[in-house]
Length: 87
Length: 87
Image (cartoon, rainbow over all chains, first blue to last red; front, side, top):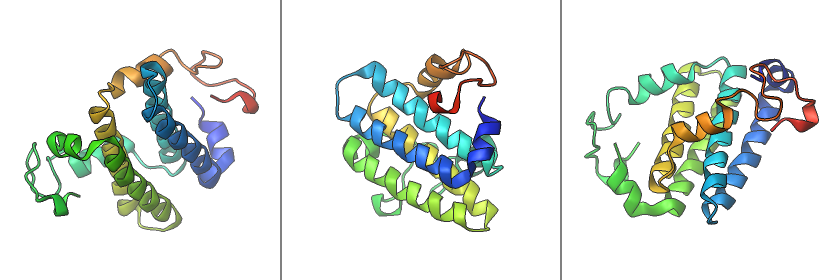
């Protein structure tokens, strides 16, 4: 949706947008506006996807590789790792 | 995968884990290890999903609601908004 602008901005500039959205998510998590909270989650994922596009990382493949077989620590679908070992 | 531990930790404690992973993503973006970079993207999404679960937000529905009709600003699949108006 934004690829050309994102590439022109580069990873560093795009990371700053991500951080702005993370701040807005933090603020929304402390509030009571559920619709706004959902939007802020969407925005953080959107900017994360943007950075992945610019960095040429396949987000879906990355998720499947790390979490597709269950917990990376204990390989169970419901993690049974000790708290200290949570990945 | 981690729901019970995540709920016990709560939104604030889980947000701190997300921030740790965002820091690791920033570091990986500056490096040359592509495999590690993909893992860090996966970890950030995992922790974001965790917070959404604890906050009882449906991430998929949130993404569809905000970005499912194209750019929220111009409603095109390839954004034509002026840079200053990027959502």
